[in-house]
Each structure stands twice: as C-alpha cells, then as structure tokens.
Amino acid sequence: MRLYHRGAAFCIKMRGKPSKMSEKRNIRDHKRRLLAAKYELRRKLYKACCKDPDLPSDMRDKHRYKLSKLPRKSSFARVRNRCISTGRPRSVYKFFRISRIVFRGLASRGPLMGIKKSSW
Image (cartoon, rainbow, N blue to C red):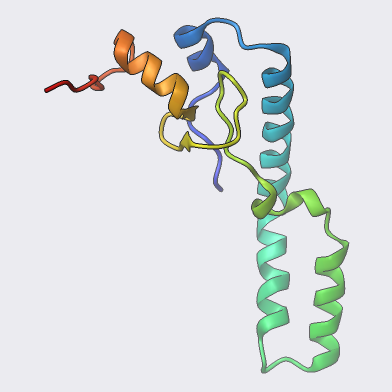
C-alpha cells in the first residue's frame, strides 16, 4: 500500500493552521488514497487476468468488465501528491509532502531537521 507517512500534525507544527481550501483538498486526497488502497489488490488481479494470454477470451472479457465496474477514483493514477500546508498540487517533494515554496521558507528558517540553506 502506498500511503504517506506524515500527517496534518506535521503541517500544523511547522506552518500553523492550514487554510480551509487546502484542508478540503487534502481531505479529498486522503479519501482517494484510502479508496485506492482498498481496491488495489482487486484491481491488480483483474488487470493480470486481462493481460494473461493463456486464459480463454470470454474469461478475460469477464475480468475486463469487472475492472470497468470498479470505482474510477480507486485508481492510484488519480491520486495526486499535494502540499499538506498549502494544498498545492505541483512541485511537491514526496519525502516531506510540502511544496518547493514552503520547503524553501522552512529551510531558511531552520525547523527542518538536517536541512540547511546553502550559501557560498
């Protein structure tokens, strides 16, 4: 399962209270991640059966039909990495789960452990 490792507590500790829109986006993203994790094994099984050339075509079609009946939002392709403090969908560092803009501010202020803004 591909769930993230740092939650909203990290965000509140680092940045303060997130805005309502970013909070709503992150809740929606969290629900989508849970749904994708729930259907992950079933989706992989159906996909493997669809791609198996040894199975008869009617059985492959049946699995393809079952795959199409799964919820659309249960695919990991629809999960978007978002910044936990701003809700920004682009340029998010996976390890920290914050955007480059927030990361730069936190790095210069110093609350990120082991990260220091370089200067030469």
